[in-house]
Image (tube, rainbow, N blue to C red):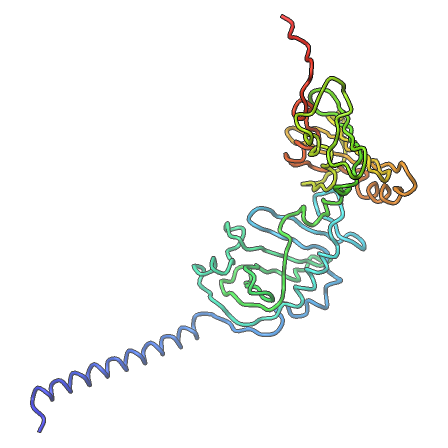
Length: 344
């Protein structure tokens, strides 16, 4: 026979159990209702339906990051970077971006809470986020693609969302975007090779001009040939200046429309007979270089032609590091043996 206390404990257990069941049912119901009324949309198939049929109609690709905004424009059979006076952009990379956009497919919905966007790298650049905003228009000005692209997912996926919509998605497909304008312009085209440079003549902004030479391919260090009365600080003091054109990357490009004369110059000759001259011009604190190549031998004619076709009419922005090596003053690599005494 059940005691009164046991009946009381049984009744409490039933009440607690019923309450727990009710809470569970309520939670499930709220979750179901939330999913119904949260605005979350499940999508499948292509992220940009029909885009593949309009790739040839695309005229511009606008890319915006937290640090830059630039636009690629189709220029005949190739591409150019708007605002750079038509300097050629990487056409293969532009076409690859368009094809990658066409191949994006939905894998599933993710969060639609703005507070969770940073975790997926989907805070828009105009809000100070790290996402990349890409907008593609055709020749009629019709927007064919408008996406905010976030973090990469593994090797073959990316997080995305549409501007003005907090809903995020996981997408299948690669979409690697060069987010700096200079990475679209092949500004690393000047590369003579570390072992090929035989001699250089430097006219720095300050101090005397000088001449460095390597007498042979097997010789590592550049010797200071002129002016007389100077000796290198170390045996390899001239190597940084001598080999700077072995591989050089510029920061930007513009039309060469300077009216003032150049402030410095660097002329290099290779063992193969290619001569490359950079004239350096000042524009405020910036230094820009024009490039001219000359073939001193028949074997160098093709290389000179390619360089001149790329650089003719253009000026290229030098980084501080490049300036330091390209036109370094003589007194930073050598010591004058018998300097003239200071006059009172």
